[in-house]
Length: 470
Ligand code: SAH
Ligand code: SF4
Ligand code: F3S
Image (cartoon, rainbow, N blue to C red; front, side, top):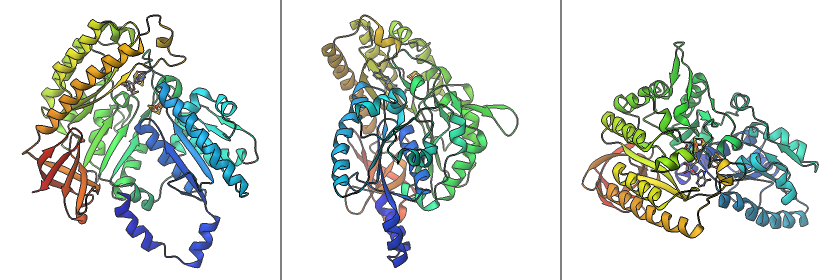
């Protein structure tokens, strides 16, 4: 996608003396993003804030004046990656110091929030630790850190952040492509016993309708065609609509669908307890709401669901899926599963396999339970052996990948809409997404970039589709 848009941005910045002088003065920032889509959104917002402060984005840490790791704390492996990356960055920082150049290093995101000052104790090259609710203040925090003092900023004031997000230029939006994320909700009050999110992202907060509409209008005006609304519990979003009534996510989607230029809407991640009628109605009545729903259930066993504090049963989930499919029969479901939660028996595991068979998923993510410090699950006694977790995960993944392959194959011979998002792998190809989020590769002219085309699917693999223009 960058290749396509870079062409016109380059011709606009001719290599004049003025531009060269500016380049020498500009500082370069490299941001590495881990974790969920919300971190992808946040990294873009950090880039926006820093570009107002004279930074330009670079794709490698080698020549960066500022390196930011936007981190994830969800599983142990995710958090540990940060420290090994900091080891590599330390060497680069030392190299640069030999040349008399500075490299500021910042850890942002959920590890920053969870570990705070501990990070710069363990990795002294870190100059700034900034939590997910404070990154709009990056320029000011960097100034404070630039004289060598360690800065740690992990305050929670989400509304304040959303009020102060920097507005990206039209050109910056264009560079990012025709699909975009918009955070509408952040944080979580549900406290599932395995999960760090309520601690790293704080309490559930919904953004205001006007803010969301304005941001989406701006994206549409810059050429964005598909918007995915984000939230850790996106379907818990609620707010006062312009009509003075309390809106839920369903009403918000209807409002956003009216914005000129927006042709596709999606949202993620949802909790089964917050699937309100108005949201299910949106799936029935709103064509541009894509027929794809990520609705994690985590486990198919009532005992484990209870121990996880999910506050619904497997039957509640089945009933919900029936209602959703009644509203929109071509909807593809996606989910998250955790195997090996403390106390999980063979029978509990079988119940999860059985649930998967009954629901049938178009795609899904599955993980071995990772005990996280500070969560109730970590202190439970009957932790499951790693070997058992691995076996259960493998079994689950075989089933899920068979379902995914079958779903992809079921589209062969059908004609579907594809939004072309970037150049394809091969010469003359464009790559896009189906309504069900599968990547689709098609021989198509470049000028279809950003358009929705009718495509007949001719082949399917485990992870993508191939088609031809109709
Ligand atoms: N808000 C979403 C999930 C956010 S975290 C929801 O309620 O479903 C994304 C996924 O990571 C979760 O759905 C869960 O499957 C997984 N996950 C979270 N904590 C985990 C842990 N401690 N070990 C393994 N997987 C975990
Ligand atoms: Fe985590 Fe549960 Fe909240 Fe999802 S609902 S973010 S899994 S605590
Ligand atoms: Fe990870 Fe934080 Fe997202 S812990 S999954 S980056 S909310």
